[in-house]
Image (cartoon, rainbow, N blue to C red; front, side):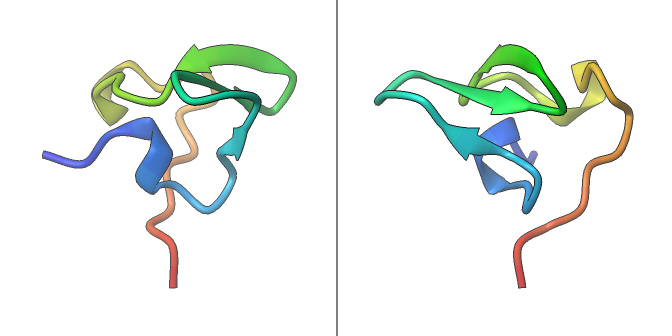
Length: 43
């Protein structure tokens, strides 16, 4: 199952968290819990 760090909109802040449309999210969070509901895999 993909996780937030696999999304092209995920911008890493440090080793464990990143920014997703202004929300701080865990890189390991399942995309089913995506705060923006906009998961797109990286190319």
